[in-house]
Image (tube, rainbow, N blue to C red):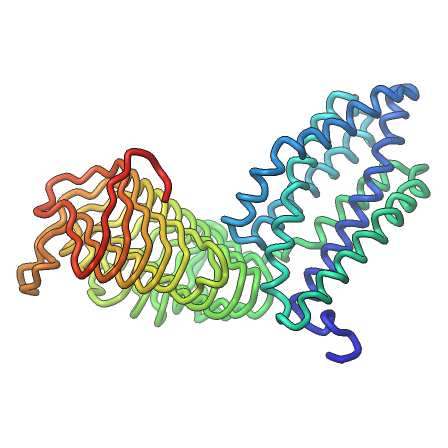
Length: 429
């Protein structure tokens, strides 16, 4: 099969290619159907058609440059999922308005602009994703297949839209469906205790109802998994993510893990709005993201981490750590370590033992708008590099500091072993 089907023999690329083709069909059909819908409600006004279609193109043009930058900084699979969700919602609303007789040129122009804003993210995110889902020897072939698909559907799908124009509402409903089929299935866990470890072996959204608790941990063993609104108690790690792509952890509470609260290896993740309780575990990490530098930017945002040796730590990773509250750690509160590139921004660190913010082992760090209060000396260790240091930079690392608030720490900033600290008057590396 691998010789006969070339790049399509690789499962990850096959999934991307099929979803791209399906959505392109929906896009082309809806574009022509939209023109006929506008003519119908505007009594055959070509001006109205021009206004609505121009709204879509103008909105896309305004954010084209920004879209490329954003798509490069965020997990590309997540960008594509969000775009698909927005486009499905827009097409569904258009179908509803036409079916109910409530559509106006103004409403269609606004919806077309929203669609255009979302659509402009597709190509940069997709171009960045392809090298990650196909082997290097088949990369050129994969890009050629996608280009051929776009070319064929560029005229084939609009032609299909013309055929379907007699049923304009059906065309939009079908277009919405092409985006919906790309979204993962949702699995609900009801209130009560569910015995783990739960091992997720397919693409899905694991959604907890109020009061849902998993005892024994969760293991993510497939790409494109989302875990939402659950409490996880115990387990070797509370949540383990290893060797997969596209994991999103949102609104999760983790407590009582034997090792790490959230343990990520060789995987790209987005972690939001979590609570990790590591009190009593002096050696574990609250959130540990390691060895995923080649998978693009990971993110930890809006989490509260209490206790543990390190609250949030990265190793050989490119991670954005923003708007988190970390306290009562026994090693470092936030650590960007082992040849990582990390941004720690707008975090609050309180009552850490030894070190608040750490940049070490040839890492490159940007620390801005963080508050570090009351870092305590680790007298029992007898180490000078644990004297209650708010920001500690070590071993050939480089840290840029901007507008950090350092209060009641015995040592504000310390750098050793050929490390470099730069205090900047404006943001950016």
